[in-house]
Length: 237
Ligand SMILES: Nc1ncnc2c1ncn2[C@@H]1O[C@H](COP(=O)(O)OP(=O)(O)OP(=O)(O)O)[C@@H](O)[C@H]1O
Ligand SMILES: [Mg+2]
Image (cartoon, rainbow, N blue to C red; front, side, top):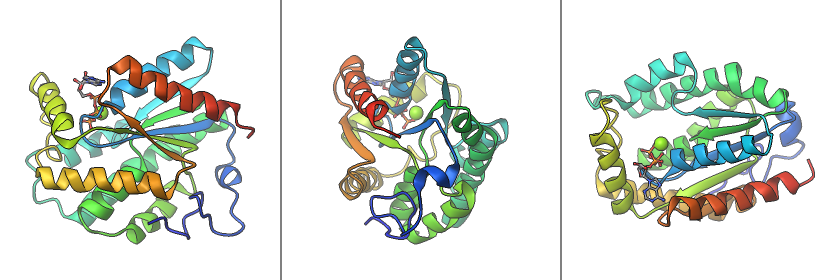
């Protein structure tokens, strides 16, 4: 469900102007979706295309992004940390996010850049709010403190069926030396809940959140991503 109290959602709280909330001139685009759907691949392709059209772009990722965020990310994704409590996980996610918002994202937006972020608050809403059962309210409560009203202008959910996404992510992780597999190791049922929650988010916030079928070849997916971004760029600020 969309939280009617959440500034910047499709049903914003009265009197809150989403652009003034962060006093920004650039555009904030986030990539979301289940594990292995192709978010990072599409973010990089979009960054390349936008730079090719002379846009100033900042690419960042969550959890992580800043050097401090990268240290927090190690704790969150380390397969050894199975005992991490849901509330601690939530606060660590937002600690990394607050650092990213303050250090990189808001300054980049203020200077007119297009900021591309690999996961943002919607991930926390879906994974911790729904997946871990903490509920949306607590996620939005911490979001208000950590992100200070920053809501993406456009959120692209790269969608994939759970089995295909997990198989892609596992193949990629086998080639990597980093044991960032704690969340990938959750049950298939958990990942189905996550995918369903993304579908509901797209239904609840149709202006901001768009589902893109990630099962097709990378370049085909990228065309759909670009079409959404072109539409956003053509929208009067
Ligand atoms: N459209 C595609 N078709 C086939 N393989 C793809 C496609 N897009 C990405 N891949 C491959 O699937 C793997 C996962 O892609 P990627 O890392 O971009 O996904 P992700 O959504 O960022 O994953 P994670 O949720 O783990 O961050 C990579 O090895 C990537 O090369
Ligand atoms: Mg990724």
